[in-house]
Image (cartoon, rainbow, N blue to C red):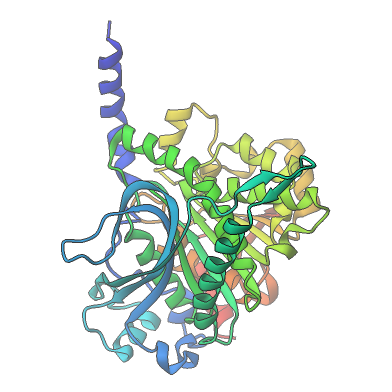
Length: 438
């Protein structure tokens, strides 16, 4: 009979290969293939890029509750430790080694040569910090809770400093949108920077790209996964404050949240709490938070838990559009099937897996809640398809940048399976090429 320690060692050995594939997409170190809509004669989005952004270097605004762990030269860096404070700053990402703008555009529109553009991190600057608690309360003589004046003044001052940085960045773009990326398990500080830099680049470099990076990346194996899972619980409070803080900036018109893998649980948990807060006040959450789009890509969530949140708790109303990207060939999500003994994880679901009561609700919410089932052939572990598959990336761009609904005038050529449920098939790239050329 195995001892408890022996059982843990055996479980670790069994799960190690599956855990390893969870980070394959995060470790992408060269430019991903160009989206289909650019490689087939469609409009060139880079022709409209502002002159100051015509560079192979992308600057990301980051917000993090990772503990700071500076480099040997003293420059800012962040590990997987948890910080009670929120720090924010800028991080440069180089798309190619001393690449010219012309060469980068050629690779980004031809579908050729992208592998010759290695990704690397440039200068990182920390611009400011928020205290461990943004609000502190006491009771007045009547027993009512009131915010302590000194902490209120400090909170508002720090909020205004952050807003000033955000306004400065917004002033450089005609589109007053903010795109927030929330990463998944085993991602170190630099990994989500690579993803967001490429997404923003391929979207035509409009709006402000933001990475919300939480204390993941503690290591591989079962214990690394469980540590990151609890770090995901730790960060929910900070993510809520981040979303509200950005929404309170008057110059921001729309906010889009893109979450991936374990980050979908982090994002949906934060949004769930914000949804409850604003509904209890009789307010419209999407309006108060300026949320235009929420994407849950390769969601590492239990299907029944997610169904409860979206249907019973009306989480689908948190934004104008909520879109889930799932794939039956996502091998990484199978890890969670084993760990949590869930019948089906949301990231690997099929239409037949959806409970009947949820299907009925989807008929009512199909206008603003959609599920895109990526049945097209994907690469690697099939976990990062939302940005490294040319068809899926095209679909994400049409959704985020243009707000296009599935099947609209030939754009987003998805195949409808049921109300609010669409498939992205192998012929999507060909159909997208036809639509882009119109």
